[in-house]
Amino acid sequence: MSYLSFSRNLARHLAANTGISQEKETIITFGIEVLVLNLVNVLLALLLGLLLGVLPLTAACLGTVALFRHTAGGAHASSPWRCAIITTLIFPTLALLATYLAHFGYNFSIVLSVIAITLGLAAIIALAPVDNPAAPIISTVRRKRLKALSFIVLILLTGIIVALGQTGWSQATAFRNGLSLSILWVSFILTKTGHRVFTYLDNVNFPLRR
Amino acid sequence: MRKLKKVVFMLAISALTFLAGIASASACIISHYQPEVPKSLQK
Image (cartoon, rainbow over all chains, first blue to last red; front, side):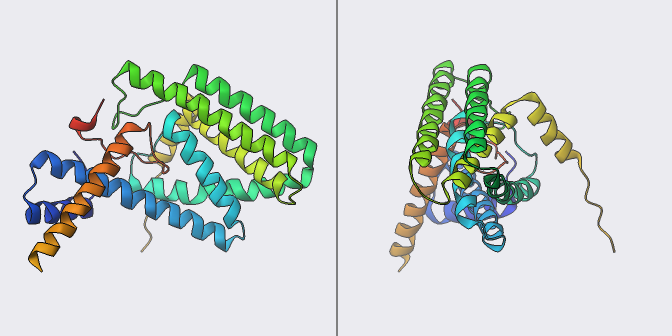
């Protein structure tokens, strides 16, 4: 098992003070890694969203992607540092794009929502759940359950998009665009092309200048 | 004091085990990196 040194050191410290088994230590190492990486990534994305003036929309995009990816899965970066860069950049970018697209008006927003929901549905039917070698989905029962839950999540998101259209809220169009773009993003990273993009990003080298 | 420290550590371990269980049950979490799921949690 390859985990970051801080996760291993913290888990070792907890294990040494409580006398838990080696197996349990591996589980809590995984738990620490999940907690810290996601917390850091979310905070960095929200911070960038705050700096760009799109914090609420960044949070909405984060929530939508989290909900959808939780059941549908998708492509991943090979290292936590590349992941941090992608996660930090993608959510404020989606929020900025959603805000910009709101200038095209209500009808454009409806068309975007219909396209996103249709592609999301197609991606779920054809691909979800997409697992990862680091977290394989072994059980067929679990696979079916995750697919069914992906449908439920998409129905829930569709409900929110429709409800936003019924409110007279001035930001409703931007938020509906944000939710639609988030669905499109998750649908994209379920595909082989999405995986190829992540493989490409994994192979990008960042030369250090002295 | 030592007893309290052990209780806090046990609570932390319980919370982390719970979180690991949730993370392993989902297809993935928010971020775009997947830490390796321990064999005992793979299903």
